[in-house]
Image (cartoon, rainbow, N blue to C red; front, side, top):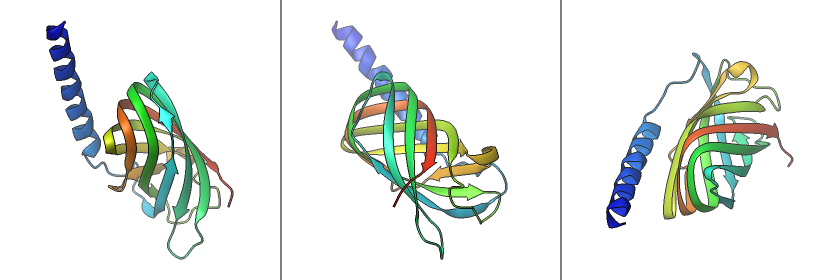
Length: 165
């Protein structure tokens, strides 16, 4: 049994290191595009369901010279997801084909890879691509974090909907 525990811990550590390293690599926006603004989201709690999870978020898109625009988002993760995250704080730079985005223009489905780990305070990173015409890139900012006891990595799908003030 001890041998299995050692193998499990070693394998988990290797997977965590791989996921964190891969998610930390900056990736350029999908299309040559312009920076639209910053999408900041908060949410929680969300329990890991071993092979996936669902997280509900409240978000605000801020753009230079424009009023902040509310959105609601749901992240569906498929992959390893163990533990419980009490609180999420995520932020992305938003890139698209043009600087202007109509009201509600961020709404749509996004997908990409993500990883997170925490024992108390922790970190999360996920780069997503999608939206109208799959033309929007969400590049994670370092502010992303979480609170809880959690280890997760895998594919993430996120649906963004217009929100309410």
